[in-house]
Length: 614
Ligand code: GTP
Ligand code: SPV
Ligand code: MN
Image (tube, rainbow, N blue to C red):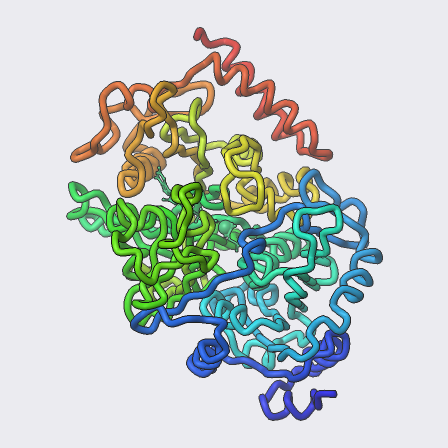
């Protein structure tokens, strides 16, 4: 048996409730050793992970890891929210009673870390000093060293975050046990994996993975699921899968902040890191705040909505990241960044990494190159030649201080005032480049009906068209009707709140499939219009589904879009929209307790479309 008290004393971990929690799970999991982690342990842990073969060197202070080949994305089916209140059940949260799930998870975890070290990772999901700090502290217990190294990049890690809590009990208990990955029955009816958030007990129990949101519990499980629940239960705030950026106008010195929800792998990282198009670069630049999570509240003293990014790093999609699409991301994973790559292709002789879209063609000299499963590319049979080298959900992990356009005030505890909230996703038709609305209920309605193609970020759903409310479908922790009401309540407190817009960079030509809009850096043009619209400088054209820009209002200098494609993305296909309203009606009908204001918005849009000629 490990002498828990001795280890915790030596680590200076004083919070008595944290100590009890650690002792309990040390006993359950049967770990052979316990180690308390601070961010300053990073270099030592990296060296240990390399020596143990868990990480490989990827050149100039960067690292490479490979996860088990069946463990490469979030599992939505195996993710469960468990509470003692059946009213928390919703359409998406796979609600189960806590009384059933807690003993089950404890059983799965019993003895499952034998022979391993259990790392104690105290963390904070907020800039220190924030008004939401009482919801931000947590302690992840994990039996995987690579998970610890990811947590150090993605969250603020150290014992001080929990020793000094005003309420010593206000930390999330987040237990991660890897399990025997090769015998978990992935995707079968004997699947042993369980990713459970016991939201009303602020306890997270994840068993059976070492990858991404399944295992880094500060990020998705706490930063989104738990925090969304806490925000609702306290009535105080929203926790959303949103990127957060600032647009600076060098000419006027003004800055505008925009938060945006796009489903996983649909462009949040790209947008928050974006450079202005060359032709606009003298005047505008974008500052990065966050690429995956924003917590939002209203300060009733000035009536504005504020937001911050609770994370400390980026867990970004590698695919198609290159000098043209996202030079900022490449800088943020440059030499000595300490970046960790997972499931990309790796050259075991040179330490180089590669993924689809990093360069136009893969490296010509195949010597030393291994695909994401560790198989030599040079030995591939004819039938495997077209297989991707990197997994489509392969990622890079790097901390915010490596991101070259990170805003100077990114960790300001007061957050930044929000001017706009946008929703978007991969939609191949119907959705124009941007449509804006000033009405809160219409904005919330638009978020609740966000529909897009699912991506490789989740197991087994890619390409499928589905509704993904506010981009929170996989992270929803309570009832959707209550969720919509909470949005109306929180933002209803603002007297100078954000406007809303829906954006789409992914409309395609029905014949040859090309993207009608060049995307990436050019996306700033749509956001600049939105800022102008908010400030009354642009008036737009009124349509049944919101205001869309006129061609003249969009800054198109240097933009390579054909006039025909531009016409399509700046128009509304009324027939297609009328059909969509029927689907929306069915979609919204799944949610009980949906506020009447949302139904009213739906009826307003439906009627306006009926009154419009196609
Ligand atoms: P998560 O981290 O999974 O929540 O995803 P994310 O929303 O941050 O996704 P990310 O920005 O990493 O984008 C994922 C993919 O979308 C990458 O392969 C990008 O190349 C692609 N992408 C991003 N922006 C655009 C765009 O404007 N146009 C096109 N065509 N593709 C884009
Ligand atoms: C997502 O899938 O939306 C992510 C990555 O941001 S993960 O942390 O794995 O959920
Ligand atoms: Mn995400």
